[in-house]
Image (cartoon, rainbow, N blue to C red; front, side, top):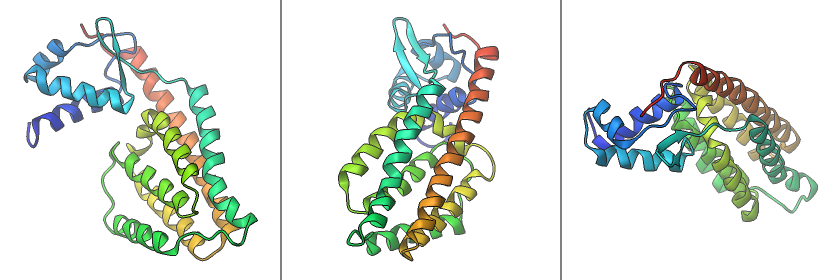
Length: 227
């Protein structure tokens, strides 16, 4: 394994989880994983700790198990996310004295222009970039409590949203949509921005649910059980 051993072990195990290689009814342990990867238990333990934080695995009496999210619950959380995010633009539409911070918008746009010029390959880590955009846009509207509420929700749906960025072209589409939404906000075209943001989040939900459901179905049917 090249690079940091702990990072490589984490990425290997994370990809196995996301690719549906582990049975939803199985249990996997540090010793078995360490043997299979040819490493000591320490980097495996550290990787599992990170997977716990990601919401991808959970501790059981005999090792670890895959977290199987409820799609119904994910949909409920997305409703909360939509309400919170749209409120950032909605409050500016309702109250002309509420203005999005132009410096914050410019700084975030510069970041996304750079990503558009050199987009990353499909990777689950892009979910963090996506979360960054949505938090920055909401924060620029001036209500930190909305941002705190959003951060609480996105942490709980991150476990399935990772699937959204594993398909070729999805990252480029997200980058383009982010830029258009933020440019509309900066130009004070708030009604248009609100519609685009709603479409963006809604489309993301359908993509995530479809891909995550397919991956979870494949895992339940074919994934190995680990001892």
